[in-house]
Length: 265
Image 1 (cartoon, rainbow, N blue to C red):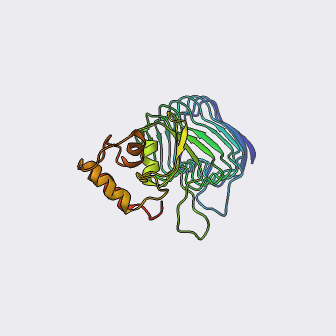
Image 2: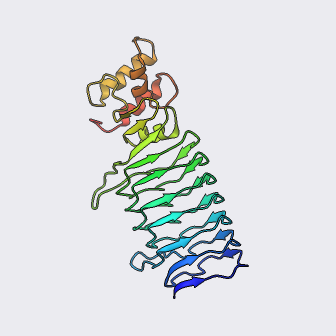
Image 3: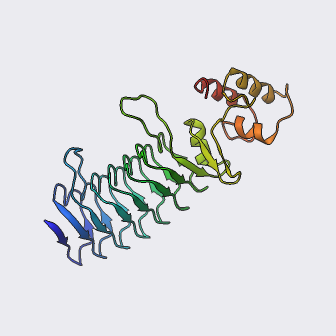
């Protein structure tokens, strides 16, 4: 089919409308408000689509599940009207190098950008409050992601990466965020390094209260002593590294989290 021209009175591209079609370029008319599930994308890994260029108008407010999955898109600019990016909406778009998420989006659903292996940098807008499980999982080239304070929930392995035949999840991305934010909480729970904007430095040793370079049971004991006021002299650095439940002080839960962390972390 190559290039396709859609009518100007079209209001919605329904589920699976162009599922399996060989389209390389498309401009969606201003009348369209919704792009449905699997509208252009494909669910089969070994049958990628050929859609390489798409112009999404400002009228679109919702991009559905698998909408552009497996399409070889290189650059996507979403309009300032989209509020929801559905699960796997741009999943496995392996040529995608740039994505602009507008300040109207409130939810980035699970696996929305999973395995976009050419994506290098993402800025989450202030409007987003939730980032779903594995939203950017497997984005092996992702070097930097900035998360605003308004985000209140980040799902499991949202920014993780796993090498082939490995059981270990790793984080090679630089997570930029603010103290006390969901970004810090995610980093603590996933043993991921985080660049804290206010401090101007990266923290990669949460739980290492005694500063010996490893998280051990000694740190857990120290947390318990601090929580029970058996030990004093808490400074800002100790609190930053040891307050793993982000409560603002040491308590038993902090000690329990330290005990559960992998040895040597």
